[in-house]
Length: 402
Image (cartoon, rainbow, N blue to C red):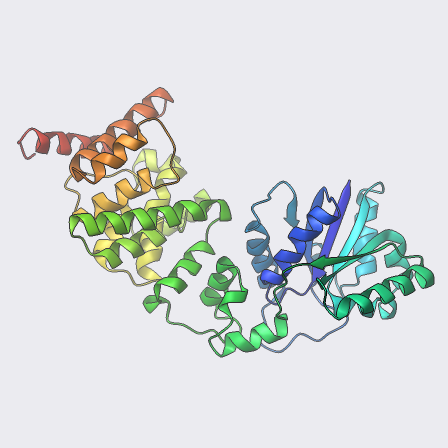
């Protein structure tokens, strides 16, 4: 196995790190790339008030997840579990002890590459791993890096590789922290990492979570879910706003409901149940067992308690999974937008999309009926609220209000 090791403080991880990682995967033909945040970097003192090691690990996990390569890209907290300085030589020895046959490649920025001979036990590092660094295509630094590569080969027997990147995000983490403290620099960050920074008040970013602009609210939402879910949330937002415009609902409320509707989707069952208990939400027997039904309720709680949404937005999120009888306009819009957003692909979705802009009630009814049929085919119980929603909409269609 050819394994790339990308170490650093990642304080915070930014788009430059991700661009380098993506190029290294291809250029080195890596089977796996592993980000390894340092707990206590030996070459620098982390600034006071900086993110904790655990926070840097969590941000790096969000950044790596954004590459959407779960089979090839991973994050390791191995250096956080060791006491003392996070020496690269120790990390490589630990990896070799696990898999002696692995071909290791150590990825690093230009400053680190140019000073590698001064690191702790550089001869161990170059014995255990090849060394790869990154440079801008046609930049002045390429010549200096090639000279250093030759030196490392002769002095330490190193295997080296200088990868020229056609596009590089020209920002250091130090500079980025300065920008963030001034309310700038968001363009250098994956949105999920920016959202994590907002939620935890890192790097001088202290925003009122109950009054966030849409961009910042999106970032916070994306930081709470896996990257593979973001396209769905974006699609639901897009669809909800279009439907709100079509049916005369508040477009901003539809937008914010959609942005937050899945924010607790990836919480564990115990965390979901604890949130329901904390907010006094009664759960029936099915909800106690089916974690998929809980995220709508807990997401609504987070949306209101943390992000200050209005009661009608809260209710739309609360009911977006099962539906219910007597749904409001906003509740119907979120329910059906979630069901048929542009990334959805299943038999009948095109009919659902056509219905949603012609007769919203009929579209929600069709969604209810499709959900009920799917659950029956899978041998799973149907939640009573979905049945009640269907029956209520059927009664409306037949001119008999329940």
